[in-house]
Amino acid sequence: SGTSRLIEIAWLLTNNIDLRGAKEIAQSARHLFLEFCDPSFKKCYGAECTPPPGGFNVAKTHLPYHMMKEHANRDTKIIVGFRNPKDTLVSLYHFHRMNKLLGNFPGTFSEFFQLVKDKHLVFGDFFEHNVGWWSIRDRPNTMYVNYEDLTEDPVKEVRRMAEFLRKEVSDEDIIKIVEWTTFGNMRDEKSTNYGALKDILDIKISPYMRKGTVGDWKNHFNEEESKYIEKQYEEICVPLGLKFRFEL
Image (cartoon, rainbow, N blue to C red; front, side):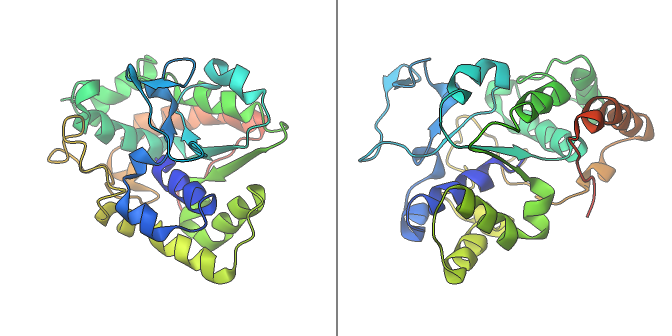
């Protein structure tokens, strides 16, 4: 739900807007995926990682904050990506359908939604997960990027990320990054659409980069499901100042 776009933007900003490298090297080989590492982050899937010269300068995780608290106490710059819960759950539903490691979920969205209510998703409850990362909003070196803002005004959000990472970039550089990281381009580029991971992702069921729009939840949620999420949102997020946009 936007993680790949944020990783791509961060990688370009920290690698001198290397569009050639972004095109030639798969995104999965350009950053560290913490879930696939042992606690030392020196081994991945039981094999030694092969970082580029100078090591990886970008890493990602979907883990909840309480599992990353020790690492968040460091001076590392952390960019937290948020997306409204309804669109996130639709995206997650299709990801579960096409992901072999997650069992290629065969059910309907309503059946999947029951897993949401039971808190049986792989990374836990959506609201607990987001509130956890929102709890470090006063931590230095932390910023938040909302998927809806990135969709509405990518130039503004890329510039914010550049300032946060203390990277001096020209207006031309910003445009290059924005054009490369449009949803359509990342969907079509082999280095960013994860189509090569056929052993894990079944793109015949659903592409990894599916729609990328804001408001697709309207095509999946029934009234009861929509009200359930809205109630959770109003009770859990709004009192903490954590707000989402459900449409543009």
